[in-house]
Image (tube, rainbow, N blue to C red):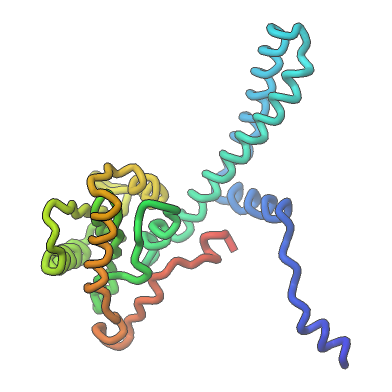
Length: 239
């Protein structure tokens, strides 16, 4: 009995990095069949270029083989990382809160709210907000009439509490249509937005926006859970 208890309480070992990379590759390759050919092509192209340069400079191909192999593996890992991220976003595409999952993958430059700032209880459409040096970003999962009305409602609420003039409010609609931003491109799109505020101004805007934070569980009818809009981390990892 004691041994069984010890076995039950012993935490499972986390898979090693190599195992994790293999799992990520299998998951990504299962969704995007071009992953393996691109990785192999990057390695072969790097080796070929390395051999050519090594032959011209050192009159020997061996330096280029090892150098090209190292660079090729690095390029292959970069390709895998980008393909894996895109595959993860494709898995949650169309789900409520997918835009929030993409926004929360932004590492710096934006303060992203943890929950939606506007929710329609009937359709469960949601609007998400972020603030930073580019200004304020209001992000919708789609371009439906309900989502656009929620954006306008949040815009009016922001203007009521924001005393600073000249703070841009950017409206971003996630989708594949014209004037829309694809889900997997949303983090890059937001990080490349032009910075118009100083750090102090951006901090002041974020502080004032805190006045708009409210408990959605109290203001939204029963049956709508805003926490469901939070990103599914397991889905993003492909599990």
